[in-house]
Length: 132
Figure 1 (tube, rainbow, N blue to C red):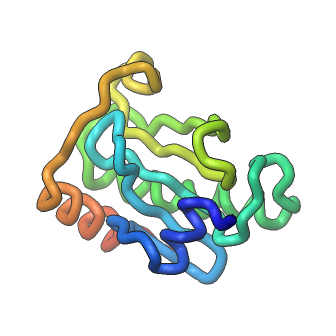
Figure 2: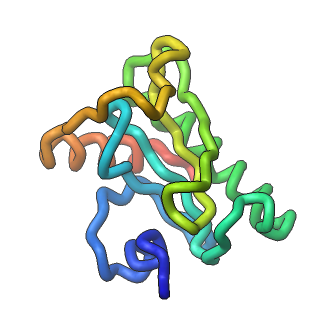
């Protein structure tokens, strides 16, 4: 069965798309730690990030860097935190989270609920700045 991310990639489930190319996609997390929390996902469905072939893994990192740079231009924060957990969805992905302090990247923190309008604004603003 296809992962939820594959279903998003295939257009079966809507998302707030930030950026996309032929190999990768970035979209806002539906349960964000902070507004703008973005997931970067290879379109090739592989469960564990370190099972990706070297070319895809390096491409994922470079794509995530471009998204993170754009996020930093849009969202007031000290850094864009990076996390790879890999347990919640069986499809490799990278979390990019705007952070002001280290504790902002704790996945045990309460999740925020930006409005649909705020998510649309953030996805559009970040996407306009991603340089693919």
